[in-house]
Image (cartoon, rainbow, N blue to C red; front, top):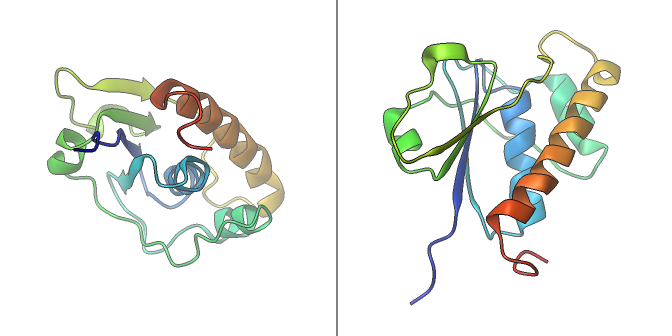
Length: 139
């Protein structure tokens, strides 16, 4: 019987920028070893075009992603919940690992302003991966 994959939920208000970039990085860098979800407390109609462009520069395509509404089930099913500016709208369940990443909101900004946010998220994802996966399991 195989071990259950660790699961991570990324939450921001619109699920259109930060949480989408974080989910894409974790999916890409974990090579499928982590179950990844993202959602927003007030999802936008589409992913932020500047976030799409910034990720495309690194060869990660998030253009087809659709912002999703945050559900209690998504939180319950996740081992780690990482919030990015959603304040008190994120449900909290005992026994979960919670982190709040303070990141600038890329909404309404151009790709030049989104690149440093993207790079900060990537560095945080790389650190998170070392905590979630035993050495060598994602490489």
